[in-house]
View 1 (cartoon, rainbow, N blue to C red):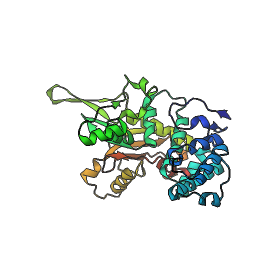
View 2: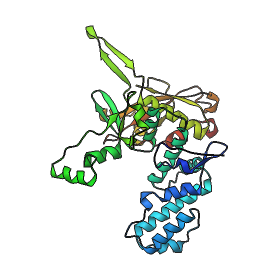
View 3: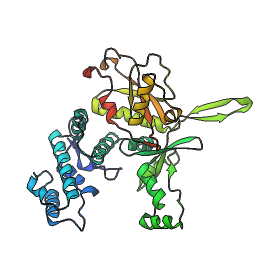
View 4: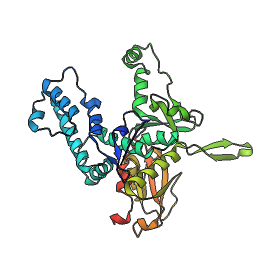
Length: 357
């Protein structure tokens, strides 16, 4: 077992975890303590004595048993519910032993009984582990899409993904906190451009920025250059956010399922023998299901598709016999508000694996 050091994603919790012989992340008391420091469980001036006592007891002994009576003594109902949920989450982690085992068990159970914030925390730690030896800022930024919602906009021919929480905050406060919100409301302040598109020129800054969520990721498939005589020339982009996302998804599948796959972004599906697809989010799942069933899809819904991908298995024998050698098609789409919320568990639950047939 190797203890992990260094962390380029603040709050990922990776430094509080350890790898087992398989390379999976073993749950430790230090990691549970890290989770206990989340804002949802932070003490506030209004915290009652029972809540303070429980918080301090857990800080000293993160894995200690908490009786129903201790929880019942917490006066505030919301705080009591927060601790109830946290302890269910903690107990699940400790019982599973590793983050990977917990995540797979939870998703395969079909009964997700913990809030998204805790699941996202687990996904972030898993991805940080996968990127431990990665020096590619594009892949690191693309990996954020698996645990942080993105706003996708079309600007000057580029499809750009920006961190939803960051963009909403900047739009509301111009990056100046509560003072900025008041100034915006009074009309004395206009939004300022504090975001930048990740590029080869500024990629090195990603590792140095105190808030990496200010980087936009370019999800454009190709750049089109107009030539003379009505000709156009399409250039495949050397640094593609979609290709970076594909590499991250390959790592994700390999680590959690032990299966090697190759994923490539594509413009459209022209396969008359289309057999299998997986939506990476709720919207693309619905769109692909409709297309597969030859149901009409309105142009407005089709326009929400950010990208399609082909997924192929390195070893066709690891696929269901009736799918061996055939591609799996993936989809990525926004909702009506232009938000992408990737569900990384979809790739783990819905691939045509031989072991699941």
